[in-house]
Structures are given as structure tokens and as C-alpha cells.
View 1 (cartoon, one colour):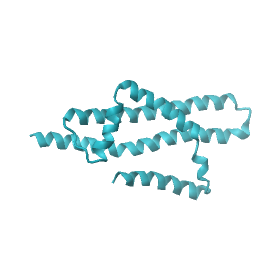
View 2 (cartoon, one colour):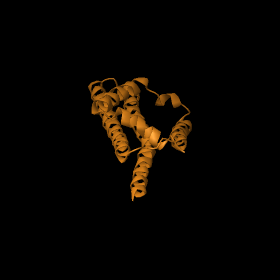
View 3 (cartoon, helix red, strand yellow):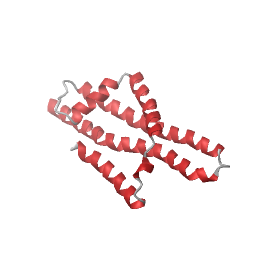
View 4 (cartoon, one colour):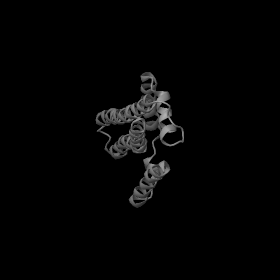
Length: 151
């Protein structure tokens, strides 16, 4: 079922770009993606929740059952951290890019493409968040099921 949300994000992005002008390649900026990952991954590792983040996928998408409630709570906390970090990182990247754009306002023909690249970094962040929200919800449900199963 998780793949439905993945397909939904991909299909919606394709549909919007197709009806705009058919140029989906304008929504691709490899450097924004790399910088976003370079901000998110070290924060996840430094928090010590990187193993819990991978467990979140096993608990929500896979068939692995947690042994303890603490494992589920740590997985949920890891997903929450990544969601908040992605939002903050994508806005941070956009703000840095906006500062660079404002310093080069004398070059008006490049203003539109530069703003588009700035917005792509926010779009990447929101796409990742959209993909993580179902995992977060599934972990919340698993926590509730685990607690009710102990009663």
C-alpha cells in the first residue's frame, strides 16, 4: 500500500508538469537534492536514530514485528526527526539560494530560472515529507495496536 503514495507523488508531479508545458526536466535539480541529503543524513546519524529510521520502514512497510514498544516509539521519533529536518533543510537551502538571487538582481533574464531552482529545493523536501507521512501514521497505529494488545 505504501507504493500507492509513492506513485501518487510521481503521478501528480508528472501530471502538473505535463499540463504546464510538458517539460518535466525543469523540475530536476541534482545539486538541490544532494545538498538536501547532505544536510539531513548527518543530522540523522548524529542523533543516533539512523538504525531506528531504517526500522521504521521494516515496521511499517515490511512484515517485521517489533519486540518492544520502545522500538516502535524510537522508530516514530526517527521519522519525526527526519520530517522536521527535511522541512527545515529545504527552507534553509531555498533561503541561501534566495540570498544569491538577490545579489544578482542586475541579471534579470536569469531571475526566473534561478527562482525556479530555489523552489525545486522546497519541492524536493515536500515530496520526501509526503512519502514519510504514511510511514509516520502507520507507526502511530502500530504503537496503539501494541499498547492495546498488552492490555
